[in-house]
Length: 295
Image (cartoon, rainbow, N blue to C red):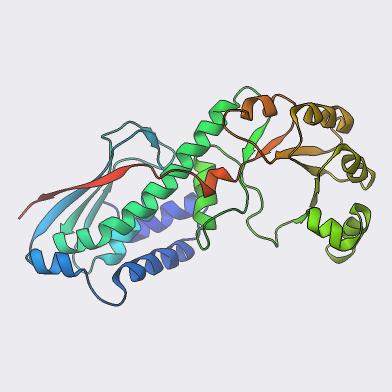
C-alpha cells in the first residue's frame, strides 16, 4: 500500500517538488469543496460505509500523474485509506486498464474522485499526445519541444507530462533563458541591439533569437546566436536555413506545425519542433472511476 511519504518520494524521483505538487492538489480540492462539503455523498451514503474505487482507462494512452491522483485521495482522507498504484508514469496502457485502487470511506473516495481524475486525465492526455508527436518524427534527428502555452498554475505538471510522453522541455519560465522575439527586436531597434543588451544585462544566460526570414537568420548568425527559432518558415526556407547555418547553431521550427506535416519539417534537418499544442490542445485521456462497496 502507498503512503503519502511514498508518494512524496515517487514525486521527487520524477523530478517534481512534493511541496509544490501538494499545494496544487490542496488548491484543487479547495476549489471543488468551496469551503463546504460533498453534499450529495454526505446525504446518500452511510458515514461508516467502506468501498473500493478503481481508476480505469476507457481508452488507450500513456499515463502521467498517477502519484498526483494518489495524493488527492490521501489529502482528502481523514480516516484510514489504502492506495495501490497499479502502473507507473510513462506506462502505455490499453483501454480497461486499472491504474489505481483506493479503499476507504465511500464518502471520502467520491469526494476525491473527480479531482484525482482531472489531474490524471489531463496529464495523461498531454503525455499521450506528446508520444504521438514523438513517434511521428522518429528516425529523424529532431526533438519535439513544448512552449510556455500552458494552463496558468499547472506549467510544472504539464511540462512534466510532456517529458513522460517522450518530449523535451523548453523554458520553464521567463527567468530561465532569454528568448528575443519579434516584438523585442522592434522595441530594441535591431537583432544586434537586442542581443547586446541581453549580453550586457544577463551575461551568464543563454539566449535564443526568433527570426521571420532568411535575412534575419543571417543577422542572428552575425551575433553568434547558438539557438535560433525559425518562425513560420516554409519547408523550402527551412531547408535553406539548415544549409546556411551548417551546424553553427541549433535550429527550432515554430508556427504552423501539425501532426500531419511534422515529419516533413523534421526531415529538413532542424533540431527542434516547437509544439504549443502539446499542452494547450491535448485532449483529456478518458479515465473513469468504478466503485464497489465492501461493507
